[in-house]
Length: 274
Image (cartoon, rainbow, N blue to C red; front, side):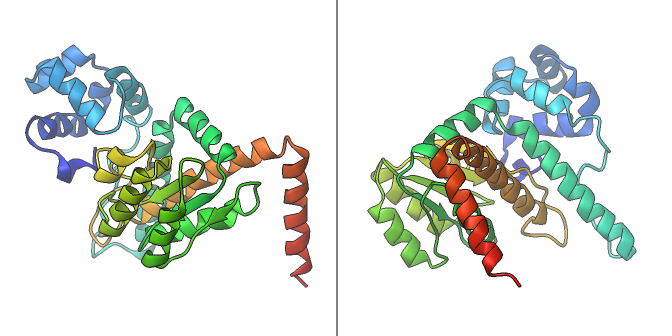
């Protein structure tokens, strides 16, 4: 809700305001209770939870209940007078909270679907720009250790050429904090035209990128002062990619090809070290 707040309007903001002001009580309310307190219809509440990334109010209630009783300053603002140690504590707390909230949104069926797509992909291309290119590069680096055939290049024109050459036998992972980056959306349109399965990693489940994608994994992050581009968003993105890599790697380890490849990669890396 914090991440999506600036994009909410009307009744959605009323619901978010009430939940954020009363997290513990709200986590225990039924959909009828919440609707009565905010003075909206249950249908409005149902549409709200779907717009912020949940399939149903029940799923939202279960997920939100796990973090509602955490510290009131879930995402703490950094003040100019804060001592260095206090700033560091707030940064670490923000990272911890972002990871907890991101984990709560990861759904078993989406993870299973991602494993199926990734293990069957002819090639796996990573796309991302700006801060998100760091996560895309990290994904490329990790998946080189698996039986997949990953590719990534930081240049937008080369990424677009990669997208043009892909089809339904390939898979794309697109990383964008906002889900609104112009270049990322241009590539997503090209991938969609080629019927390429797309896995989006974004903080905004109602963003244009999310709507164009086959699967969406939400990286929850705060937007606070001193951080126009959320640092914890990157940490959440990297951890989602780590999770996908580990799941695919575990599948590959069950085969002689995958196990042998991992040993070969480890051996090659060891020979490069003194």
